[in-house]
Image (cartoon, rainbow, N blue to C red; front, side, top):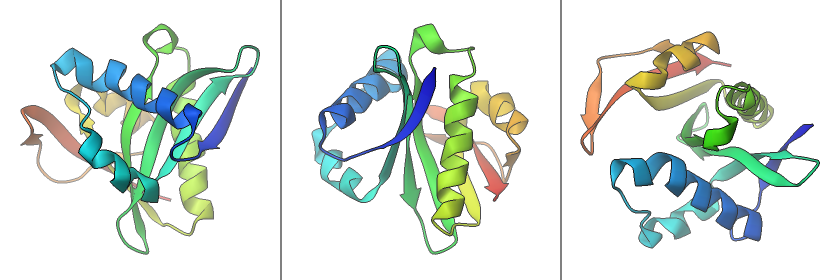
Length: 145
């Protein structure tokens, strides 16, 4: 059984999430996690999904406030062995719920083109043109919540 939870910045669970994000999102692209960005993450909401039976972290993401209405979802990472099993859907739906509870009305993100369909299934729509950032092509995805 899975459980969604908020992860405290600087905790051992946070370190697990950083390692998962690196393994899933950065390492395959030959990129490194730069510790100089870590202090900024203290201001963000970190969300994780764990398997309750063994307390294993299955996935996670970050929510970053933009202004009073808009929050950005970033660094959505699901353990490779858990992909395609509904973890991502559960995690994103929980993030939407948390953003709503915090008073936000719009959730935005930059999705790699390979996962645009995944986010469309969750009610996001593409806004604007496709763009490149750091050598990676993205679509800006938006959901009114």
